[in-house]
Length: 233
Image 1 (spheres, one colour):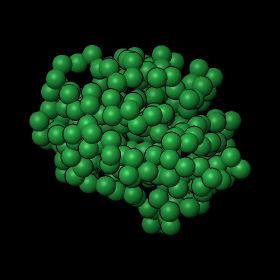
Image 2: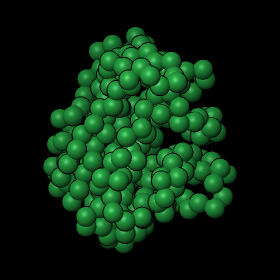
Image 3: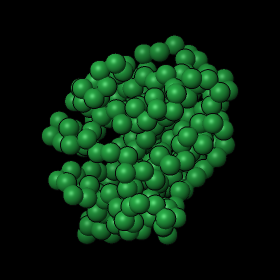
Image 4: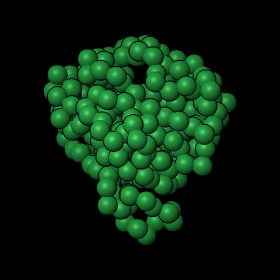
């Protein structure tokens, strides 16, 4: 599976983005979910990009391996975290034995998967390397993400008006020239994939901002940009 986004072109700029604004909201609930659902310390960051989620997980006291299909993003990860462990992979193929990790984390990755069949393949591979009692936490955009504007993204483009399940939407990272494309997947799409991968959905969150945060929100206090799924075997 080739990614829709040109990380060779803007990989450095994307890797430099901090966990602020809309990105902050994507990560806000993760420490609590880890405390609730993860008992061990070994973690896999699937689709680590420039290593931002990997470094975040490390800040939570986890021993983390970051993997990504993009060699450019793996290079950016290693530049920012020379002591970290990062490895390029093929989509849905992990070079680890069964039952290797207590947590598998994936942030803003599944929207780059273009078919439900590929999604199921990735989920099955995640399940294979997940230890019994461990958890998979997936953060991704909601269908509403490409219909509204956000603190971190401009999404009200004409081509986004009538998107349906599986279609590809456009987002521009606010204040940059980074253009991102992501597929629209609904709750029903995800739940069907979880069921076919024989994973159990234990919690779904769609975090909203309270309005008291030190960020200038656009739609985040009323409409969820992110959905967070917590899964177990």
